[in-house]
Length: 102
Image 1 (tube, rainbow, N blue to C red):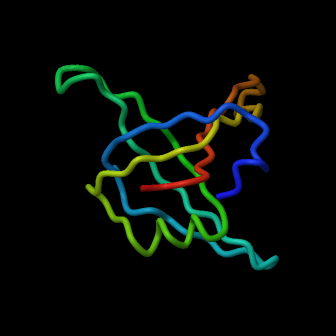
Image 2 (image 1 turned 60 degrees about the vertical axis):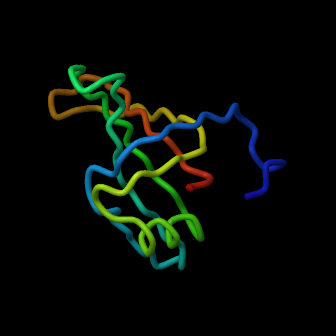
């Protein structure tokens, strides 16, 4: 990972994959993997879900080496996207863009 290319603060989270990573290949040749990890302080807390996406070599590494239940440490940054739901209300989707995985 090239840290010089990152223009944002980096965050790190640790958790267990809630599902097998889903990988998609695009006509452009790029690939994207998506997965989620629950964030909890202890077993009595309700989980907050960290929806993750990664691209390219990181996506391939995740899809080849990790599966549901595996513990991962992800390093990346948050991305916000606004969209309109079926009723026309504007909502914000927050995704964690993974730049590195351990």
